[in-house]
Length: 308
Ligand SMILES: Cc1cc2nc3c(=O)[nH]c(=O)nc-3n(C[C@H](O)[C@H](O)[C@H](O)COP(=O)(O)O)c2cc1C
Image (cartoon, rainbow, N blue to C red):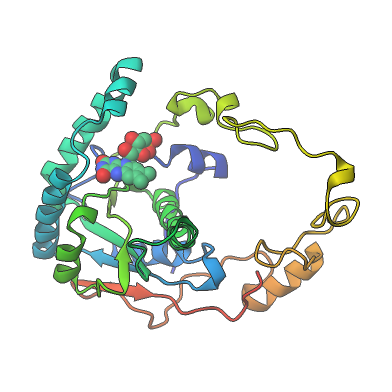
């Protein structure tokens, strides 16, 4: 089954996938199969050690949405409060910017129960009290998929906004939705609806859209706030060109296996064994779940190719 997509270029998709609150169409239902397709696209995202421990709870039942919205509102109250000192500083630096976010948030809060689908992305395992390395591996295995889900939704004319109101009341939400809290962690909640109109504005260009100029966000070879000089070449360990440097035209291996270089042809062949060269698999009619029940969790099993 195919679904209509907006005629966006890749750059337009990346620049116009915005947080949508006021322009969520609260009166137009979303086809559960379309939500499922967006999840399916999201599960193309990378995960640490190819664990693929995501699950997505897609809440569409009206009563359950109302209960979840109520918890979310409570969670928001327990969160970081309406405006931190930093938010206030930014609001004064660029008048209107934060007020817009907060008034949109208020609109969302008042209407959350009316949003046709509330999606909770989850990841296997909890990070409470863990070191940064483990936190990075876990959260970093969830949010590429979350963002892909949001991009896929935008591509299909749906609006989303990543929220975290459920996190302060995560245990209660887990109880409501049957999420095994001790072993599965929620990562936020994404209200999803068709957008009212399909045009969304890009943010201001470049990383500077959040304030700091690009030069303060990116720098070569050391952090912008702690510049250090690279060691002279003669002092480096490994080969003369550096231990991980590969010959021109040869792709380096994955970050987890940097020494294994593969040619583009080899990469194409490996991919070809799964779904054809460069092709995204189409919507499957398999039994990994469906959206015909009031709510459910979709899971995706591990793939056989751990080296992609
Ligand atoms: C980690 C994270 C948490 C967020 N939490 C919320 C939230 O709880 N409620 C909300 O309305 N927006 C939330 N947002 C959306 C941001 O407010 C939004 O991305 C920001 O205002 C910029 O708007 P834009 O996405 O349209 O560029 C969150 C975004 C991120 C990345």
